Image (cartoon, rainbow, N blue to C red; front, top):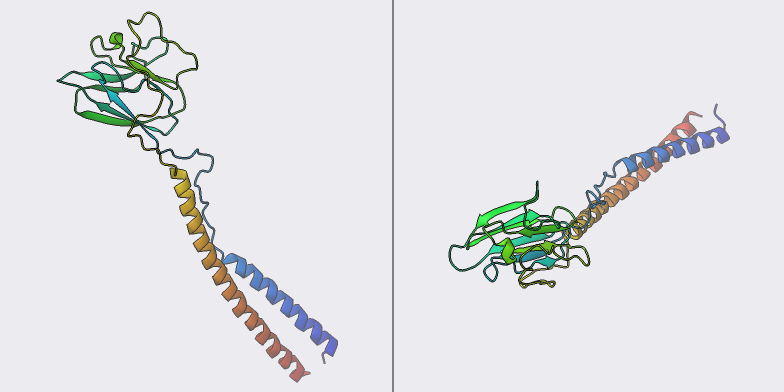
Length: 226
């Protein structure tokens, strides 16, 4: 025969064990949520465009001294009268009129033609036209030039125009790609978390009800056999 005190202890033990099991199962139903930013160490994705007219004022670039960051888009737009060819080739600070080994080369074209490229990294870029004597006529320029830099004196003449401010139209959205991704991820995370919380709460309520019923049945059974 089981004493009353022992029956109570058994009932309490079973109740505690069932609570522990329910807790562990409740946590297991929560999904593993993906982070809002796939790679939070990456800088924001920029949507800034820089428009540079090639063949501006016959032998020049509309922008030949400006700043651009990694991810910015350079939009090269050929213009001019007649079938005049011009090019955009990367060079160096030391030799602005000589192509850089391994540098970019957008080829020789005439109007109408345009091409875009993204700035691959934050550094100085020098560019020129390698068609005929374009460079000697001042068709060269730079991006992110060092402060106080002056072009080599052996060039025939300086660039025709220095434009340090953005040239319209230059869209500069305030919202960046990474912010949009983060917002979308946050919304998705919030929705998933809400569904998970609702599921867990429902599961816990149902399990608690089962614990109470099971405990009462077990207690009644122990009472009858004693």
